[in-house]
Image (cartoon, rainbow, N blue to C red; front, top):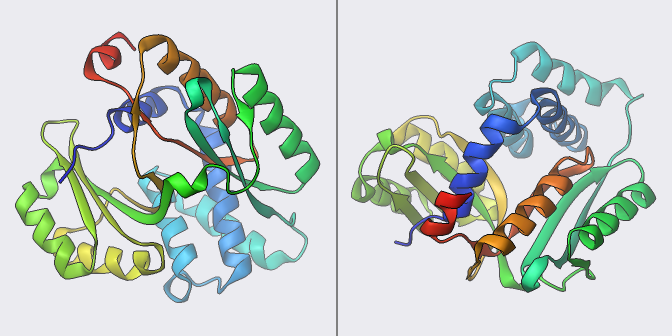
Length: 249
């Protein structure tokens, strides 16, 4: 049982404080629309849509906004989005994966490449860094879900592969499973532990590199700039921040 990434906690708190609500809702709505368009508009019959709706509810997105995003998928006059992954290196060779959803590939590629360059990194080719990550499902619970042993037993019975737990008010539990089993593992855990804070597909670093304050600040700028792009859905990097550096951030 390993400790969850300190950087993930910093990102989470920072995101809660800084993220523009309308931008966050826009990205969540885009995922809902695409998920509904690719499959059934009924979340009960569409695992990807069900997870997208769960993610939206976790961020307190109003039900009417969720319903409107689903209806948009069936209107036939909405934008056609292409899902694309970009891979590259940030400052000090930290591996970065960017997932985007766009209606203009040229615009998105240009913006992502420019951001990497301006922030001291460089964009690579597909596959250049993804081999350093595992594409898995992540289900997160707060500390009130139970102690580490309780959550571990529930996760094993649900078919999960790994659990990371941290104690304290800002701690919690992060449960990992094969990406294709995310929906069923999430449902099994919900029956045992209650509703999760979040259930999503992620790129989980196989190893993390600890960084100093200067590198952490540069990486924060790169990630913040990428996430501020309307076309970017998520950004993942394989670094961790030591506690003394985290305190300064």
